[in-house]
Image (cartoon, rainbow over all chains, first blue to last red; front, side, top):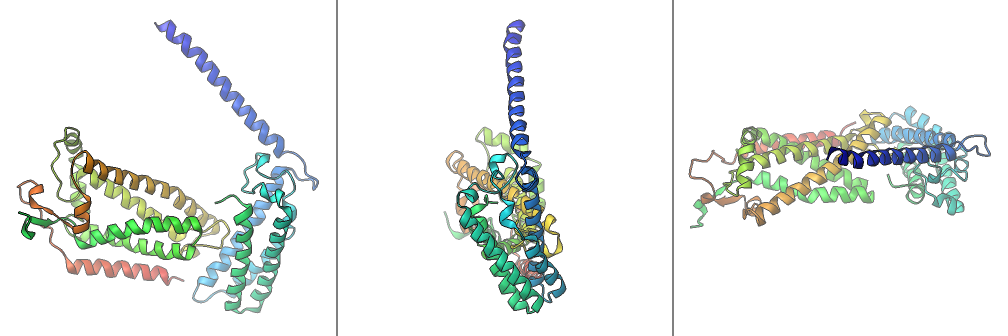
Length: 171
Length: 224
């Protein structure tokens, strides 16, 4: 009886071990393979994805600063102005952050959807709209009119949303 | 003999109102978040914050069936109660049964976590945020938002369990629990003959709890 059980268990365990090993290999190979491909700009796919995420995160941080101050009863203009000035800088070259091969198919964790490369022209239009709005936001912010800043901030946020709704995985 | 005297008050008006407002608000909160109507989400969320706060205060100073201390004591007889349920011999509990007491604590804990994390949450773009997110960094706000999203699954699970339990009592144990949560009353004969705890309404305490929670909501609303 005991031998009979062992005869079943051993191959099953061996099989499972093999399977999991295969799975791991396939996965790590897949990721590191595509992720380490060097792009035309000299960066690897992984570096490119991480670089754009870092830029976008800095923009998110700047937006939070502006949004926090706009909600305050007495907004700190200096904070708004510094944050607004950083956005066009962080957004420079944005369309170039998405070369072919840096989508989810690379295996690197990214919310960028494949439709970016299927509808590249629309994507680039939306990025340009954001950059334009960010420059305006910066100009308005340096002017110091809180109501106008609020309006420009809303417009800029709208351009982010327009692109994200279509080209980014739902959060 | 279903005269008014034989039907006694189990759930006071505040407990029922808070309960049914939450029933309306949870789906609305879910939907507004899914659809990105964040202004509405914030308003409904702040309302929910006030309701949870009121219910927590009411659990300390409210009517007997609303208070937490008797529920904690009830949990002591959980094992016996589950045994009675299994043998289909359970008697109706005045107020929360031992099992229901556990459910109340779990639901309130998850609801309190949900409204608290919501106050500090920041969306991935830094464009939308809870009314107290000013107090935390972008990264911390993102973590609050992550917990807010995960915890909602827990809330949905507990609500599913709650509805399943009500259905189980209704169809299997033949005990109708929805009616009393609407009218507040139940036949005295449903409970054992032994004297029931004093469960009189407490208008002054109710007013105090309402004013206190409303003050907290207004404080959050006008923060900054």
